[in-house]
Image (cartoon, rainbow, N blue to C red):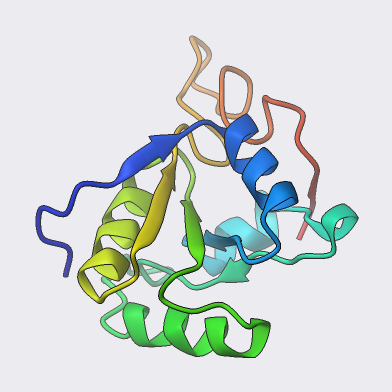
Length: 145
């Protein structure tokens, strides 16, 4: 899955702006079920949206989710999204989401974007995430799972 498709990375603030501005834009969180439960989720309720949750790698064994493209496609249908909708992929720090965006672009989704710095961003000097960059550090709405 993936290939060398070029994917633009956009900031968390730009991601929030696009989600608010474009009714068809979708945030796809590709972290694991454990991350959603214990770290938290982007809260899009103030803009009448919910993130689509599909693991890129399965927890706890970190195996690649071979059905990822199919699961995302299935989740997009009921919310009215299609291959022309802007799909914004987020993970912990921007690595898995880039791979996920490439996989969906290779499957014909034309407007896939990677959310730079992800939900928690990079490690700080104390080896903690969520303080330097990313969704949480930017003060964007989120909720504990």
